Amino acid sequence: MTPTRLLAPSALLALLLVLLVPVPALADTGLGTPGVTEARAWIVEDSTGRVLAESNADAAFAPASITKVMTAMVALDAGLPMDTEVAMPAHPEDGWEAAQVAGYRVGETSTLEDMLEVLLVYSANDAGYAIAEKVAGSQGAFADLMNRKAAEIGMTRTAFRNPHGLEEDGHESCARDLAAMGRYALTHYPFIARMVRTHAVTVPVNGEERTFYSTDELMPVYSPLIGIKTGKVEAGTTFLGAARKDGLTLYTCVLGCATDWGRFEDTRTMMEWAFDGATRLTLADPGRALEVLPFAYRFGFSVSVRPQASVTGLLWPDGGECSYTRVALSRGQLGIPGEPAGACLWRQGDRIVGACAYVVDTVASPDAAWSSDPAAPPLPVQRKAA
Image 1 (tube, rainbow, N blue to C red):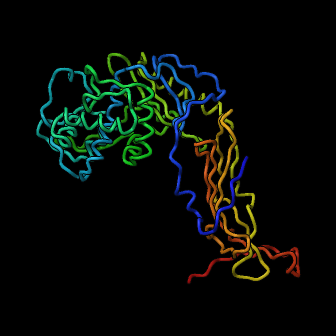
Image 2 (spheres, rainbow, N blue to C red):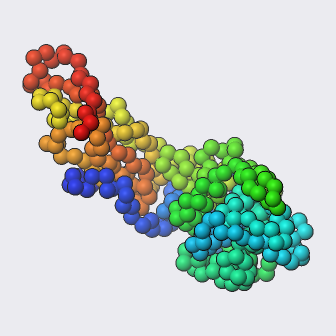
Image 3 (cartoon, rainbow, N blue to C red):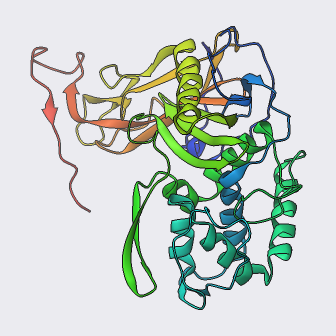
C-alpha cells in the first residue's frame, strides 16, 4: 500500500469532502466471466464506470420502465416545489390496456412528490404521463428534455420518445448507457436514491389512501442491493441495479431477459461474481492506535488517536496498488478527548475503496517518563463545557 504525503493540519477533514471526478476505464480485472443465463445484453461496472464484464452492452433494446429514472431526473431538474399540484390528463388508450397504473382518474390531482413516489416505487405509467404534461406542457416536449439530459450524461446510444417506457418506435437504449444513467441518478439525486430503496408508499389517489408496493422483488432477499429500477415489455424483462458491500458499489443492467425472476437472478449473479472476485482488506481498526498526542488537560499524560469505526474495502485483482491520503493532527498538537483528529481516504486507481475519520480517545494515560507509578491505570476524562 502506497501512502501519499501527510497533509497540513489546516486541511483537517477536508479530505472527505473533496472527491476527484471519476474517470471511466476498461481494464482486465482477472475475474473471469459471470454466469448470466437469460439476459441478451448486460453489463457490470463499479462506481468509476470501470467495466468489469459485459456482453452485447451497446446493442439497442427497449429500456421499458427503466425510462422512469430519466423521467424523475428531468422532473426534479425543473425545480418545481414538491407540493405542486399535478392533474391527471387524458391519455391515449392504445397500448395502455395492460399498462401498470396507479389509477388516477382524468382531472384528479396529486402532488408532484406523491406522483414521483408511485412512479419510482410502483412504476405507475399514468404518473409519468401526468408529470411530463405538468413539467413540459406535452409528451413530446418532455421527451426532448429527456434526450437533452441523456446527452449531458453521455448516453450516446439512447433515444427517448415517452416518459413511461411503454414500447414505441425509436424509444431505445443500451445496457452501457443505462448503467451510466443509474450511476448518475444515485449520485446526484438523493430523492431518487431514497425512493428506489423504498418497499412501499402510501399516497392519496382519487381521494382515498392507497399503498403501492415496489416492483423490485430482489430488494427484500438481497441485502447489498440499493436499487434501482425494473422494466417489462414484450421484448423481455429488464433491470437496472446497484449494490454496495464493504465500500464497493456496483452498477448493473440486464436487458431482454425471458422471465420476471430471471432479470433478478442474472443481476444477483453478476453482483456476487464481482464481490467474490475482489480481495477484502482491513483499512482501519479502532483497536489499533494511529498515533499518540500530548494530553491537553494534564501535563505528563497522553491520549491515543484511533479510527472512529472499523473500515474494510474490496480491491480488484490487477487493479493497481491501493494508495491512501491522510489528514492528521501534528504530533506536537495537544489532544482533546473526543475531538476529531483527522481522516483518511483510500483509493485503487480512480475508485474510492474506503474512508474513515480519526478521533482522540476519551481516556488519557500517564507518560512513562513522568509517572511515579508506571502501572497506574488510565485516567478517564470528560471534557468540561466552556
